Length: 75
Ligand SMILES: [Zn+2]
Image (spheres, rainbow, N blue to C red):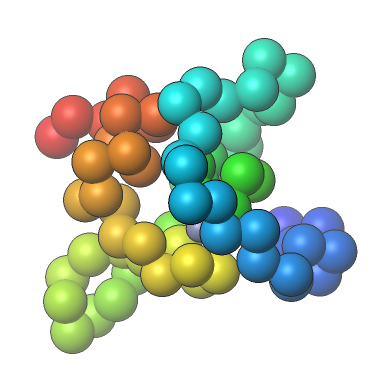
């Protein structure tokens, strides 16, 4: 699981200018997405009330333009 690694990245970077590309040396695991605002791989957590998935750090949703763009998820 990813909890242990995430313990090291509790401090939120929260980019004002989101990443436009995932760094080449990064390999995302299943279910992970690259958060362009936190500059790290995260597992987006489902928000039952809103019906979207959100980054647990910066709360951006997976419907955010930059999240979709960088993860190439055009659903
Ligand atoms: Zn984030």
